[in-house]
Amino acid sequence: MDSPPGSICCADNESAERKASALVECIMNEGKDVPLDEAPVLLPGWYNHSLVTRGQEYFTSNIFCIMAAKLSGLVGLLSVPSILKILMDTNKSSSPPKAYKRYMETINHMIEWYQSDLRNPNSKGRKSILNVRRLHSAANMKIGRITQKDLAITQFGFIGFALTCPEVLGLPQSGQEGLVHFWRVIGHLIGIKDRYNLFQGCKKCSTAACKMIVEKVYGPGTESPPEHYNEMTDSLLKGMWPVMPIINPVAYREMVRRMCGLSPKQLPWLPQTLLNVQLTIHKLASVQLLNLVLVPYLNFQMWLTLFFQRTAPFLAFIAFHDFWT
Figure 1 (spheres, one colour):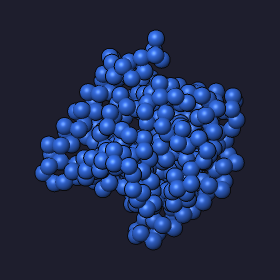
Figure 2: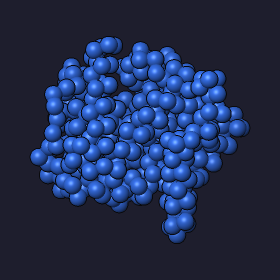
Figure 3: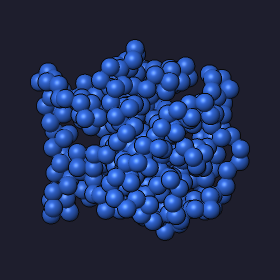
């Protein structure tokens, strides 16, 4: 399935489905027995700096909606028993304050990747990736083996919904080729072997592969979630309140369910109202002309929020005062 970066490796939807099916089968069946790659990793020969830059620009131009895609992916990820067990065993996400600290660290790592020249091994992004690899290695030794399957499914968590549900999130489809290649590179540097890299193909077959991951993993997991799913997603979503104050755990879990293609559930009036508000904001972000004003405003709001989280996290202090003191 490997293809030159920027090329169209699938002539039509049928070939995309065929290649995606082979990849997902490989990840699910073989990847579960292959540990993360802890060998030193250099930039791959297929690295395309122009595409990586386009992926970084796509993030910068759509950060509000990309952050929603990422948070939705993390909520869905907690429905995967093996991933949920790892996160529970590390005990770094078991309460809203802990979840805030952990996932703000993840967000900060991610922003370093998006803002760095990945060709430079001394860049903040490359140093951040090395730090993440060390954390994975430590977790691997402490709580058990992290597999290529775990890493590939986690890879989906960052941008999978951006590919499968761009219209729900208010994301443009143009420019996503760069986003796919960027995350192919990040996956490689994090320790995903090319054979199991979810984004090893073009946008068309990568999107098809993500839809199959939803069908096989995220959909069943959110429909019949494992024990402690609600508890852990409550901690995550309440922990993210200083970043996205509109968040309601019940509403956000329902949003993720719907993005997994599950039938809508009727919620109590407050979660339902907040869900409708959130869906409307994302829908308006894709409306022609209106998006010329709304998207920059939402992006500015998100950048400003992240700036304050890094420099003066007063909302986090208010929300988690007992934790900090």
